Structures are given as structure tokens and as C-alpha cells.
Image: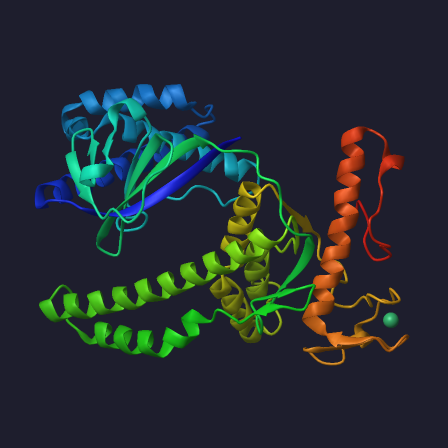
Length: 406
Ligand SMILES: [Zn+2]
């Protein structure tokens, strides 16, 4: 099977290369915003949205026009990739996966992508990479790139430049190891497995919050763009970087451990985006407990659940396993022993006691067990759908709470 993998390194560019990269990122941002403005204009005038080819034509015009001739200094492929990004942003919007595309601001996701492997040269022995219009770039070679280079993305984050090299290689179809497990994601515990093991809360942001607040206050007292302001700003960025690093590290360790030890992982299909939106409510219908909820939402986002799920998904696929998302229905209120559903079963936030049969367990473990049962049922449905006979579905668990089609 083909495995795509990205390898990310910090670049060590020369001063001239840094200036060039800033310029290229700026040109890409300009093209993205210009194209987005054009599409909006066309929409307002009742005209059809331009397709990718149409946008590319416009790009050529802009590169030839005297007032935007500086665009011709940037490599053309990354500029076109920006138009592809805009296309994808529109597609995600129409599929209701994302908000309407927004204009890009300087300093937010600065970067550009080289899509043509023929124009890229990777010299791993000398820890350098050749990119069009930039020449040879040195990078911190922390590990070997495996496989054939497919594309390269250059990005800037907190004042540093990075390169992400995506490669493709043939790997043997792995045989999944281990059994099935359900996961309950929470705030008090980051993840609880149906076998009872759990992972401590991430809360990396909370730990750094006080420090961050202090340096942010210091920053606000400085005269903008003065040398003291720049120093304070660097301090803020350093703390942000530390929070990000700690979170990434934790999520990767956890998702790797779970995906290596299980063939099938079931997880609640939480719509984190909707949850954070609904808390504030609307002007006509203000949300209840906004403060408490926004605190919880912040916690949820802080935990990086979406990123965790994304990692589980691809890591399981690498190991030959499956990730199964189930709708969160009564997972915290159903008794795994007798299937009795009631909010009364949940004695406290942490404790589950069934009012009918007396079954007692940690509430998060109960949630994880129910997620696993729902996942088993869903998996059986999908398998039977695949063979075209609903009767062929074998429910591996006695699933009272779980249903195929909610
Ligand atoms: Zn019970």
C-alpha cells in the first residue's frame, strides 16, 4: 500500500533567502486575497464563480500588468497552488465543513507550496534542499525522509521558517495488532479507554496561562514597535511556542500508543465547532451559562480533540486498523450491564451507579464502554452494507444501546 507521509524540519536560511521567502509568502497572500475578492465581486454581479483554470488565466494577467509585475518575481507554481487552496476553501464551505473563505492576514499561516517534484532537489547527505528561485536551503536534519518526494511546503511560524516534505512510498499492508477499544474524551481526563486505562488532562494552556497573561500585560504597556515592545513580543511568542510544542508532543504520544495497541478504535463523533458556537447563543437567544460553557469550550479546544482524532485516524490506517466515529447518544447515561438509560445513573460527574441493577463504575469508563458497543454495531452495519445483505450483519456485542442508523 502507498503511504504518504510529511517530514518537517526547521530551515536555516540566509538573510537573502529569508527576504525572498517573506516576499513569496506575501505574493501568495496577495494572489489569494485578490482571487477571493474577484470571486465575491462576480457573485455580487450575478456572474458564475471562476474555476481554477479561469483563475490561473487571471494570475497570468496580474503577473504581466505593470502595477503588479512584482508577482512575476515569485515562483509561479506556489502562486497557482494558492488558487487551488482557495478552490478547496470554497469546496469545504459548500460541503458545510468550513466557514466562508476569509482574506488572509500577514503573519497568519504565512507559507507557500511547491507541487512539482521535478523542480525540487533533496540532498539529505548534506542536509540541504533546492527550491526554485530560492536555491539551496540548509535545514536541521533530524531524521531521514523516506520514499519519493511529492511536494514541499515552506511555512513561517513564530519567526522561524520550516519546510514540510511530503513523500510517498510503498509499504507492506500491515496487519492490525490488538483488539477493539472505545474512547471517552473528557476535560477531567483527556481520554479514558473502555478497558479502564486513562490519560491525564493536557491542560498545557492552563499551566502557562498565568505566565502568558503577565507577559501580554507587559507587552500592552510598551510603546508599539519600540525595542522593548519587540522584546516583550518575542517573550509572548516563546510561551505560545512552548504551549504548542507541549500539546503536540502529548497528542502524538497518546495517539501513537493507542493506535499501536488496537485494531479498532471507537470514538464519539463530537462537533467541537458547533459546541463552541452554541455557547454564546445569538442576540435574540443568548446562551445559558455562557461563562461556564465558554470555560468548558476553551478546555475542549485546549485539549486538541480534533487534532487527536485526526492523528488517530491516520496512525490507525498506517497500522491497518480502523477508526469508527459514533454519534454521542446516551453514552454517559446507559448502563453497560442492563441497558437501562437514565440521567439518574450518573450520580456525580465522576461516578456511574445504575439505579436498576446497581452496576458501579467510573463514569468516563462507562462512556467509553458504550462508545465501543455503538462502534461494534456500526462496524457490523457497514460490513453488512458492503456485502449487500443487511441480514449478514453480525453484531459482535449484545448491543442494546447501539443502533445502526440513529
Ligand atoms: Zn444496570
